[in-house]
Image (cartoon, rainbow, N blue to C red; front, side, top):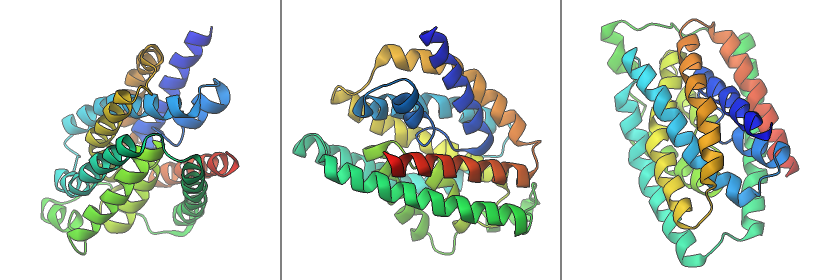
Length: 263
């Protein structure tokens, strides 16, 4: 029965990831810790590889729909991957992360998610709607940030947070993309967030695996449910109204933030 619970949890989170870009760490890690009793350090390591393989499936689906803004993905990855490798090197040199530092980062991130949820809910109710499709002439302008260094810097910050906590690639990533690329349609925001998270979570997950903090049988059970789930979610994302997605996203962020603050 517990095995079916893992598969169902994987399917649920996979569907949410495909629909909103959020769920890899901000949903799965709390689920593993609070509902299944997995030790936190093992939940983080396992969830990172879970997110990598799950979001790979979503990236393939979005790529086939030709809605992945690869230019955006490249800029974010240019910051997140080096930051991830640096963080893994520091963890390997220093040993396990100090519990007090982990607690501070987790609580700070939880507060940030709650603030983000409030802002996202406000935008879903009062904000202007972004076109779901772009004319070819508008594609380049929508995928160009105010300055090329901004997505690189934010990518580095996200890379560090994800490597330490497994949270941030989806929740923080979507929010950053909405701020840096306000003209980019929401399905493309979600597609970019999922695509850049694949190499980031894979590198971070393999780093944690080298430290012995990955439960491989548990990972297999989660992926059994998540891969069909993210395919379903990525298909629904193209046909779900923006306000519905934003409202759902704000609820998910509020839930994740509350859980992180209470850890």
